[in-house]
Length: 394
Ligand SMILES: Cc1ncc(COP(=O)(O)O)c(C=O)c1O
Image (cartoon, rainbow, N blue to C red; front, side):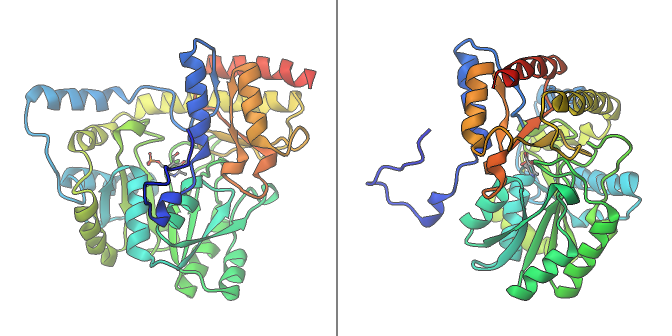
């Protein structure tokens, strides 16, 4: 789809927001599927499974009972907020008051609330490069300046306290946004890196935002640390989209310092009124779906192991094995420095869809591809065979 707007339509500066290219590749893959072609989907950023059975049943029950599906409190159903708070005790051994939980419209809705509550236009917020592209695009659309700090495969893509301190000394930062496990890299920020990062932010008066949307999806015995373990002042963003496999239900959550709760509530009341009630009821039930969700994690783990094994055999041996999420970020600089054109050609000639790195990293991304292993095991297997044969001919 073209991004040009008809010149007669007057538009605000924010209408110039960049496209999220990964979604454009998804659209090309969908076109191919609709035309009857085969697509091995390694570009998708969402679980290749239906939602957990218990979540679907809870929603069905609610529909069958025929009660009102209306607005909820702006910060979410009290029982869901309580259950999310309990999750911090169960998963991390941390006490979080339910009053600090805000239920949002996906984590995407959470980011919009948080950015507006914390930052004014012109404020500088550090993000990593590579990073999830909507961070940069959303901050920019709100008039906030994303400061993209390059991270490296050699340090497992982590942003360090030193980098933050250095950038802050150059020109003050108002916020730092990190993710662990990361998208597109799948790497986890270890405690030895996270603790000093959180302490530095606190000392310098910089807001620390931690995107923990891939928590629960880690492999090989790695666990992801929550920023709350290192700072009471950190703001956590999470969601039912990834581990819980509920992307389309659009439910996320924030854990906030007490004094940010009311400002977020006021913004949420005005922007969204509430997150969808039916989805909140389903999300609550998803907390009980651990057996099913762990089976899915095991399937991702098998896909991950297959890729880690097979890619080097086809000459793609330049990547940090992902600790979590369902992505592997591979340096394909040996083959191209135009990953967008390369991904398009790969899709057209083999039916294997992957996401070009340029979306995540405008500087170095031309030599990277992100392979998602969230899809079916058969797709991953076929993609390995097809890609291996294609790369041999190049
Ligand atoms: C790192 C990261 N954060 C946030 C999101 C947004 O997810 P949602 O709005 O579905 O919670 C995504 C989606 O892919 C993501 O990868």
